[in-house]
Every structure is written in structure tokens, then in C-alpha cells.
Length: 355
Image (cartoon, rainbow, N blue to C red; front, side, top):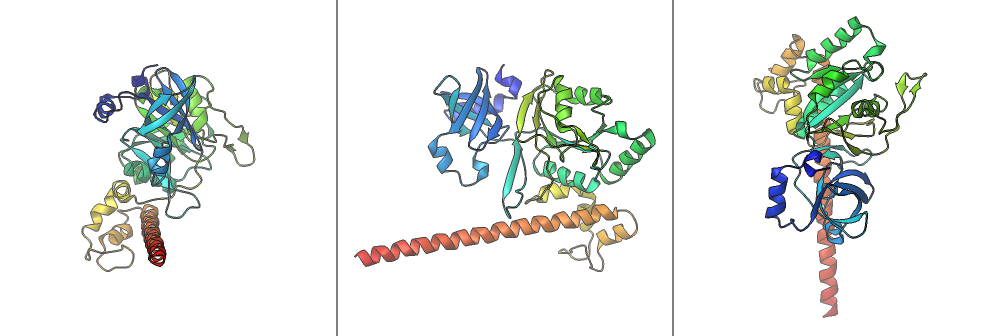
């Protein structure tokens, strides 16, 4: 397999040469298991780990490799390698880490398209769609909405769901499919391009792994049976993994996400809720919160039906999450700074006593 089949391009090669990494082999991280990585190169796959300097100089999780990253490696055994550097990322999908206030979790890197998968039964939720759209929009990733399990509803019900989505989400590609009957798979397959990377996003049990298997033409990811009690598939994907399709497209499967926490996604919110942002320019007050102010153009639009009430409420909710995330980061940085000052003072006091 050539590096180009994994998405390697001239921009990455230029960086490799300019950064004097041409003595190293180049590969792409296709899976991650704690501190170990599987790196795929044109010579095969390697079990890789970080060199000490790269590990100890990392200031945050963003400084460490993730699925989708291009890395410079050196081989030291038949199937083992060391990671010396991470090449620049052109995109980074992340969310707020579950249970870790003010911290981010990387979902995948170097993604071109985000395939947001929702099932038409219990999982269908436009508010959640807007969350995934915001994450994609903040990450320089083109979102595509995949409406799955359409074999469970009739044509009238499907048209109703599509209409609901289009009323709130404008100018985004929506592809309706069934993993069971394979209806709509041809439309999605026709869209997938060689050398481009697609990341599957969605809740547990919506059919992401089954979709990957259908696109690959064979079972490469384990799938779960449908639960009769909750009418949805069981979550079986436990880690992220990059798969190269026979068509040349590159797909990354993800564990289902119960929570899609918003980080410092100002740009993402502005793109997802463009209509609200544009209206806010006509508000009477520049610092309008769009909640109670007299002369608020957004509230007026909600009252007369120009802006969907649920979309408006979702916008406010995600905005509050963004502000809370940013304030938490600022608070943690302040504590770290004060702690650093305290350590320096202790060292200074010790040195003074010694003399």
C-alpha cells in the first residue's frame, strides 16, 4: 500500500523535507491503545510508542498522537517502531472530555468529512445533530448527515423526518440509508472519494460499525444484535480505528458517544447557527444575551416563527456550555500559575537558608 492510499499528500511531504524528517519513515496512526499505537506505512503495520522526549515535553493531550495522525517513525524490530514526531494536522475533531471539566478529548485528526449517523427510531434528535454539526464546523470538517434504519419506517414518516431536519439545518447533505436492505448505500458510496478521510460520528447502536462493514464489503468491525427491549443495536466498538476501503476512501469508526460536550467552539456555533448570529447584529444592545432584552432581534424572530424555538434554546444551551468550559480552563490556568509561583518561592527560600 502506498502512503497516498492513506491520504498522504504534497503538503505533508514538503513539511517532512523542510523539517529534516526525511531520514524517518512516515506512517499514519490507525488505532490507539493507551500509550501504544498501530502505525500503518507503505511497508506494513508497526506497534509503536513515543520516544521519551516527545512524551515528556507534551503539555496536553493535543501534543500526543491520535487516530488519523501522520507520524515520523524509526523501526527497531520486525514490527516495532518509535514515534519521533507528529506532522501538522489540517483538522482536529474534539469534544469536552466526559467527567473531566475543562478538558478536551480528541476524537480523530486529519478528517475531511464527518459522517453524522442517526437512526430514525429512538436515536433521532435534531438537537444532537446540531451538536455534532457544531463540532464539525469548529474543526474544519465538512459534515454529512446519514439517516439510518429507514427500513423501520414508511415513506411518509421518512419525508416528515427529512423535512424536520431541513427546516433547522440548511444546505447540508443528507443521505437516507438502511444497513439491512442496503437502500441508499449506493448514494453514499458514490460520494466517497479516494484519499479522503471520513469519520463516523454518532451515538451507540445507530449502526456505524455495520455501515463500515457494508462499505468495506466484509466484516471488519464487530457488530451487536438488536435489543428487542430498546429497539437499537448494542454498542460494541471500544476504540477508534482507521480502515481503508476498496474504493480508496478512508474511514474511521468511533465508539458511540453518549455525551457530546461543547468546548471553546465559537466558530462552530457561529456556522451552525448562522441565522441567529446574523440576526444578533440587529439587536439593540451589542452585549445582548438574547434572553430578556428589549429590542432583541433574535427574540423577535423566535416570537414570529422565523427562528425555530428548539433551535434557539439549543443555541443558548451550547453557548452556556462553551462559556463554562472557557471559564474552567481560565480558572485551572490561574491555579497552575499560582502553584508554579509557590514552588519557585519555596525553592528560593530553601536557597536563602542554605546560604
